[in-house]
Image (cartoon, rainbow, N blue to C red; front, side, top):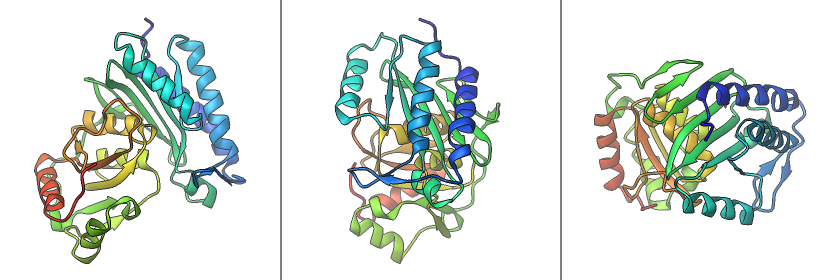
Amino acid sequence: MNTPELAIVSALLRNAARGEILPRAQSPDPRLKADGTWITDADLAMQTRVQRELAALWPDIPLLGEEMSAAEQQRLMAEQAAAPDGPGLWVLDPLDGTSNFSAGLPVFGPSLAWIRGGRVRLGVVVDVMRDEVFSAALGAGAQLNGQPLRVPQGPPPLPKTIACIDFKRLSAPLATQLAMRPPYASQRSIGSVALDWCWVAAGRFHLYLHGSQGLWDYAAGSLILQEAGGHAQTLGGEAVFNNTLEKRSAVCTGDAGLFAQWVQWLDANSATSG
């Protein structure tokens, strides 16, 4: 099999984003989908282009895109899982942060992962407005714009940390505890799950908590954080990636000691499994 190369995939995704997303940023024309989330012409154009260009380079690897039907997504995922020695599967979110994009908030970009043999093997996330390309290959480390990316050493103590948290996807008891007596100094939510993971890897956030995210949201970012030396699990203590389309929670930090403290606090404050 012609194995995908990280540099080629990274350049492909960056160029596609600059060609399909960036020119549409001034007039996004958002529409609501049946599930209540937003979609724009940029989402559709990006998915079409990336699928076409990947197929030209690696014709034996199919692509699962967020904007495909649920039935098609399930079929592709089942075929990949049933053939661990096969070519694998691309998983694409053509525009993570569509709500931001639609509102003119400059935090959004595509996320692309290659899954094979029950593992995420490549991951690329592009921050379009900052022209930052986060990438990783399994066992080969993470990169930011082609330079090695490692989580910073010596994070602040838990009470001094900055957390990235999406409250609306958490259980009511846990969200209440976080709001009433937060263990961190400050909290943010940037509206792009893929970039959430990357910003933890880059040390821009010390803590991360999200209650429910799709495979295309987290696949690439979770590999990038892992390869940068970070730590992650679900609220239930499982690995986040489980080779299914099941929605997953995420508890993350860049530092092992801080991770243990964060998990301990969550376990003691009405966290639910997921």
